Image (cartoon, rainbow, N blue to C red; front, side, top):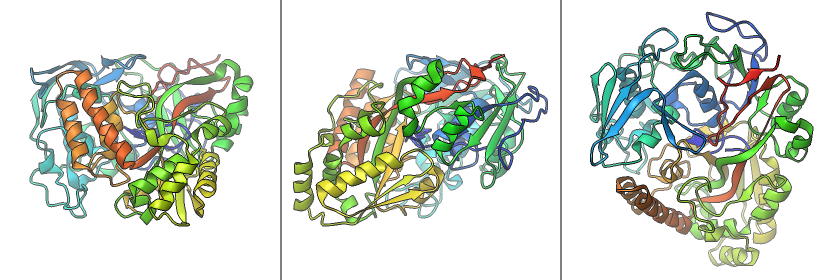
Length: 555
């Protein structure tokens, strides 16, 4: 799912760069109490600025997802072994072809305004996400549902969106049907045995009737003050343009049981080094990713409050394959750039050995990863230079962009030096103020050179590393890559009769990425997190989500 902001995943979210925002204009302070929790000092969590307001259907970054994960509960979740477990759903059953799915809900879940979570809560939210004119980041995740082409037609150039796309033929997905208050069915456009696995992603969350404008759209003010069904609720509205914190209090009527802490404050940061110093000083409680400069000493300084574990994130360089700089549009030159980057030195020296050089487009923690699959990811300066010159790469300039709020400067500069030395080119490095800022420019197609990007899985499937980032019209296809054969292989993987057979088709699609090199895998992420002496029982899963409902204060 997920684009991510930091030297972590995506998320992302759902790509590995992300942000979350905060409530209340200027920073810290104590959360107010409007009926849940107490006025005690909140647990303070570091995040980046989210790209959009906080609506499940329009959040595709890891920081925004971190916030929504505290506010909402979906149909399913995942255990420590990445197996699907039911949460809001009583059952999710396919027909014999895995094309028609029947979903029954558990009793007891309510939104924070008292409204019951019903089948209609899901169907209305999914229809609003998919409807093209609403321009929701999560819309493409419903492309598997029957009728998607009618609600979100594709423009003549192969991209979705209201700018060039024809008028939709329908406002709702024909494949979604409410059966009764607790039951709905989902008919897919083609068989897909992995559909149930997808449903833990943020964009599949339910939304209350107050979210909708009565004309198929979502109210903007809902994103500023979202009404969820999870363990925490908003303490006050959040203004994306001005606020630097997002404040929540515990929702005491949460059906799964009350959270251990009374309040949470997400603090939006633009500099991870500053956040690290705030954590050390006791002014911040949880950082889910430490800056590179902190990693070498964090374990000694924090002791058992330091977390180091595998993550699902992959860090990339992306390219605008449609209207980027001339070198960026040439797959052979992109391969030359890949072979000119010394991944081993970057991961060992910049990240103190806490990253692993990437050799595939998918993370090693998901089924389907193949060691050494990306043959063009091997460091070979001589071959890189020869390929660059043979294909008219010239002297540049080559531009590389990144978000300055994610702790990326050191490794981007190291990669830039690799290109200067190994390809003999001029390299221009551009830092955007925030991940949200670079995402906005990527959405407009205005980043024309190489750009730093990352992905953390939305759900544990190889497909999740392929379709959203590289599928035609994918929700995070910032490079505008489009390959009909690639898309067809994904459908074959979806329709396979077994997971093993599906993975084989997804791997064939991955081989096409190695051939075309629309992105360059650089490193696999690892979680390097830390927390203060004020809290305990801090856990972070491979999706880079903090389980805030289980965090406790130290008395």
